[in-house]
Image (cartoon, rainbow, N blue to C red):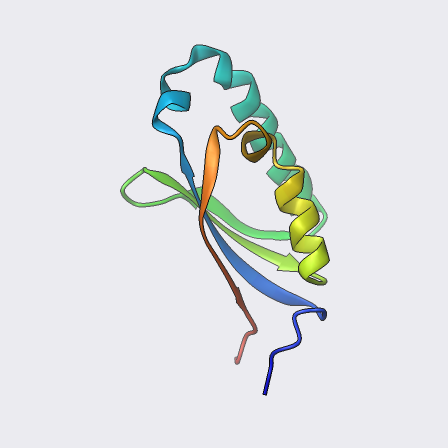
Amino acid sequence: MATDFSKPHYVALVLTMDEQAQLQNGNKKNRNLHQSYYHRLKKQNSVLFYGNTLNDTGLYIILQVSSDEHLTEIIDNDPLLKTAAMEIVSITPFFTCI
């Protein structure tokens, strides 16, 4: 049976920073925009968790989305993904059991 991701669900999103982008000072503005973007989404209850991975090589974000279209909108509007300073390592949709 196929899972219907057109309904509300959660997504684990793992991002990593491009090595060249880490070295560029001009990228600080985009990082600030990126953080502000996810803070706004948190206020809208779309972000449940946001933080660095333990090895500090990327970000781990747990999202609550209404559909895959909602997820696509979030990804498409991420300031660091738009500039290719960050890239997506994995996207894992899931439903909760408990």
